[in-house]
Amino acid sequence: MPKTLAEKILSEKSGTDAHAGDIVIAKVDLAFVQDTTGPLTVRQFQAAGLSLADPGRTILFIDHAAPSPNANLSNDHIFLRDFARASGGVLSEAGDGICHQIVAEAYARPGDVIVGADSHTVTAGGLGAFATGMGSSDVAVAFGLGRTWLRVPETFRIEVSGAFQAGVSAKDLILHLIGLIGADGATYKALEFGGEAVARMSLSGRFTIANMAVEAGAKAGLFPADAATKEYLKAEGRAGDYRELAPDKGASYEKQIKIDAGKLEPTVSKPHTVDNTALAKELKGTKIDQVVIGTCTNGRLEDLEVAAGILRGKQRKESVRLIVAPASRRVLTEAIARGYIQAFIEAGGLILPPGCGPCLGLHQGALGDGEACLSTANRNFKGRMGNPNGFIYLGSPATAAATALTGEITDPREVL
Amino acid sequence: MLKGRAHKFGDGISTDHIIPGRYAHLRSNLPELAKHVLEDADVNFAKKVKHGDFVVGGLNFGLGSSREHAPLVIKMAGVSAVLARSVARIFFRNAINLGLPVLICDTDKINDGDELEVDLAGGKVRNVTTGAELSFGRIPAVMLKILNEGGLIPYIQKHGEFKL
Image (cartoon, rainbow over all chains, first blue to last red; front, side):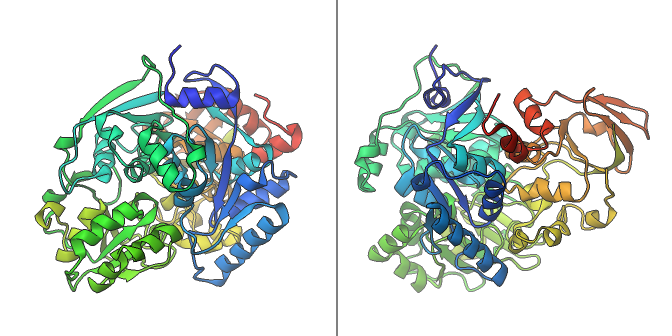
């Protein structure tokens, strides 16, 4: 029977002929935690009396509170470093970058099964890995057994035709889709993307879309591994990790959704749910106090390039703070070399170290009471950025940069 | 038979409502962390909840982050089960892994403060206050095996392996 990408990967990794609805035990090719889920994972791992199945493919990332803002989190970091040293697991230190970005740059391969104790683990679906977020207990067991159980998900096929207009990007596409199907529209399902717009899309855009699959409830957001994937892996010095991967013709989909990329416009999620979407132009006049450009959704070089292109030689509106957080050390280094960082600083922005930044309300840009933020992140839940009395809007890097110039939500096509 | 009072919440209760990221520095100090359970949904919840009570949500309960601390602090509050019309995938798996039952049923028929009796084996919820009887969907077999051992870690301690 023809297979979806999810069925193909999970068949291979479980050694069975797996179809949607089956329960399989799959080999795990990469398992990781970050600093807010890692300590519990390690304690569960120790309680279960396990040892690492594959230390070189077990990663402990310090990215959420990097560098640590207080003694408690510093002690959690010590705990993770000590565990890495004792177990042989790999430590990714504060400043290296966000787990999902480093997994994309350095670890994920097409056809892998990846589990991470972070819901945005789905990001690696952008290069054709079945990657999904789990809690600490599940990842602890994956650390030890090198296997996990999974229900093979039904798949929604998202067919994207056409080409984006100037000022419109992958972020607008995924916000539009989530607005269309809802924050629980794909619960337990896989989203599989294809079509001519996807074939032309860079890996950076694919990661943005896969990253937010979980915001529709999906277990995975999957892209084929194709010529663009091959180019990406080659540029990361991992040409040998490439393999072609595509769904079978005639695979069975629970739902098919067609989107014409050419008809999309800059899209924004309003507080406090991701599916509460509107067009940026409809929100003109909405005052914004802080703009954040970065995170695992949109902190890549291509995102910074777009934002720097809009901000270069201009000044942020005095009433808005502009925070830029590159997703990894590699992104930061290259952004410096290309002059993007200079452009942000000259435009009145401030640069955070590579990491999750203010996205989850731990540090580095928590909102004050009644303040509104336009962020390129993936979540705008109440309380997300450190304050239940804050208001978070989500948009693309172009929308964020345009908004930094005007101090109100702005359709980037107005400033291009 | 589980007995307790319902604490009713609306649709879309996220893991940020359940345990906000701003308390991440307390995640290695669980008794302190647990004082903030569901704080951004009901600031008085931690004071009101009694041992054996139920958390009752609407649609898509527990969406968002993979933090297992979300079901963990609910369990630490003494809650005996979470009832919801639907539940987010990672939260569901995390709750079962901690031995906290999650029951999918028509929670529109439950009001805040109602007395409930839950028959886990029989799949029934009786609303003692209103007299309504609800049935909940079966927990998938693999998750039931994990739940019956008290969670994933006790399951692995006992079996050493997934035995589906």
